[in-house]
Image (cartoon, rainbow, N blue to C red; front, top):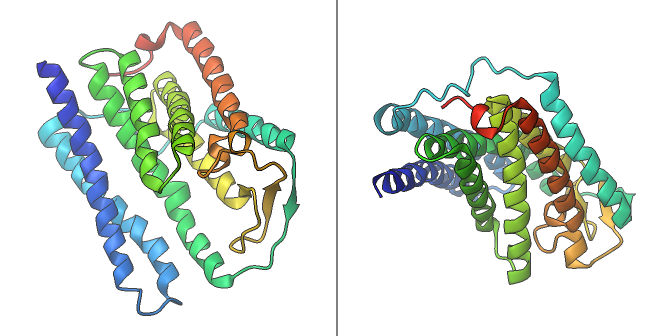
Length: 281
């Protein structure tokens, strides 16, 4: 019971750090509502504020509560070629699935104001959010559970939480929410397996960042939106196939891609000696 309560405390505190950062970053929005033409700056500055506050809280918790050096966070960052192989493998499988669904590239007439917001938000979507989430769900949650129970337990719990937390991104139907939890959990398992295999946060961050980046640069949707110069519009509107309200990330083709990559990683980890032998606790 003692370990269980300590683990719940650690998870709560690291999630709280992020929530405080999100709130602080969101408060920045109020100061720009008087002029919508300056508002896109919020989508650039807000995530930076979130990151600064989160890192402050994380370093405080690391010293006072976690008492852990978290050696999988190495500075300066180290990006090995195989990290990109994992990312490209996933992206290729997802792209193949999207093409199987069918659709076409369109070049809509843009709303420059919405386009400016999307450009400004790229730093948060591609760099800051993946970095924060990898520290929370891979570095902290996996390691804190692993040192009290096992690495497998850490991977499972962190992945389930990773899927569940994404429910906060907006109102969804029950079906879309179930899709999101399943897809998010599977993606979390894949990222976690990469993390424990490579024993580095930069491995899972590379995949997470590139996945978000490609999805932002070439968005996939069921209808045309005027906020980006190029889009891939699916010809199928079945929620099971297209991912429902959350989008292509939760589609059946992406879910299959996550499962394939999980299978590949599990085989690689088995050759390396098993999951318990891969990570430094």
